[in-house]
Each structure stands twice: as structure tokens, then as C-alpha cells.
Image 1 (cartoon, rainbow, N blue to C red):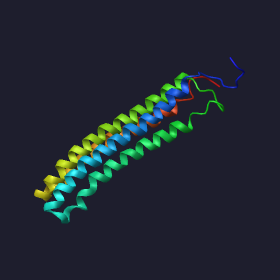
Image 2: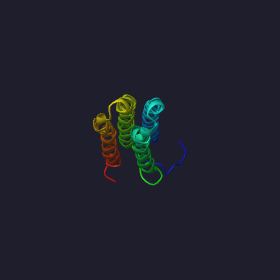
Image 3: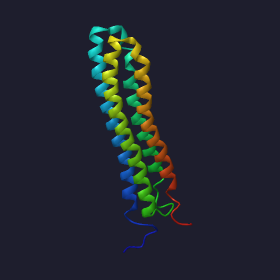
Image 4: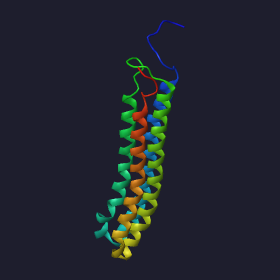
Length: 166
């Protein structure tokens, strides 16, 4: 083995970068699905009730926020991976991987929920305007799922670097 200043596990950064990628990819998949599915509902509803299109854009905006959650975690993880400055062990890589998966998969699930509720909700709101508040509450609870993933992801990524006393 060549002389190297790297100390830590050689494969650990792979898991850390995989966590950053997972956070962004899965969150953006949820955001894309939520945007597309609820966007179809908005377009369908807008044919009959065009005055409600701007009011019905809420699910699309809420779905778009999911990608930002993944971006936040991906940036936090990637800034924590610097094996030349500080030893990076498998514990750290696994902490970052689990952080990314927690945020990304929660964002994917939330995006699916927002898309389905948004699609059905805006169509139903066009027929019965009293359903708007109920639709918004359901969307908020669906968005909260992704927020839980973001919070757990931040906590898990903060555990990286605590594997050994340096």
C-alpha cells in the first residue's frame, strides 16, 4: 500500500455519498410524482372551473418542497465527508447512508400521498368548494411525513463523527 495520509475506512465515503445521493434522488422522485399527479388534477379541473386553478396549485407547491428537503440533507451529508481533514469510519458512512435513506424515502412516500390527495382533492374541490380546508389539512399531514424524515435525517447525520474519540 502506498503511503497515504488517509486514516479511517477506505470504503466508508462510498456509503456516505450513497446516502447523499439517496436523499436527493428519492426526495426528487416523490416531488416529481406529487407534482405530476396533482398537476393532472389541476389541469383536468381547470377545464371546467378555470377560476380555481390558482387556488388549486397548493398541492403542486407542497410536492415541490419535498425536493428541497432532500437537497438539504444531501448538502449536510456531503459537507461532512472529508476524509483528508478528519478520519471517516464505516460508522460515519452508515450514519450518512441511513440519514439519506430516512429523508429520501420519507420524501418519496410523502410525494405519493400528496400526488394522490392533490389529484382527487382539486377535482373534488371544483365540485364542492367546502372540501378545500379538508384537502389542505390532509396535504399538511402528508407533508409532515417528509418533515419527519428530514428531522430524523439531520439527527442521524449529526451522529457521524462520534464513532471514535479523536
